[in-house]
Length: 131
Image 1: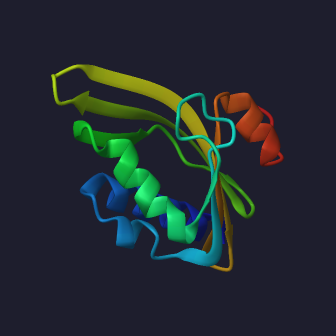
Image 2 (image 1 turned 120 degrees about the vertical axis):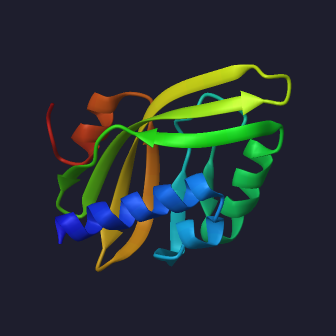
Image 3 (image 1 turned 180 degrees about the vertical axis):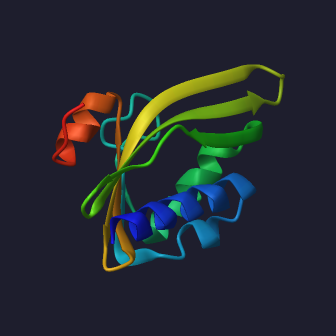
């Protein structure tokens, strides 16, 4: 099941990078949570499935490009830990990079939560792993 979970997370990230947010949420549960409660910027909080696309649109509104570079997919039972870098270019050409780690919780082929962590080790521990 873990490899299947990795493929679900990978497909969602690939869809997000294509700008296909419907496909990014294709495997999300109806009570899906996108947890940015540990975020440092203005998009902080926990978003439900019905809110997340609006949050993504608001977040990327002033950008000419934005993409996620996943560095690895770490299997941990129902969790997939994904350290990644967010790359963006603003309308004025300024490039921005931010590194965080997501912990995906996937049950029976359905994404129930994506939680963002500032620290890779904290994300690993939340998934029951140590570095």
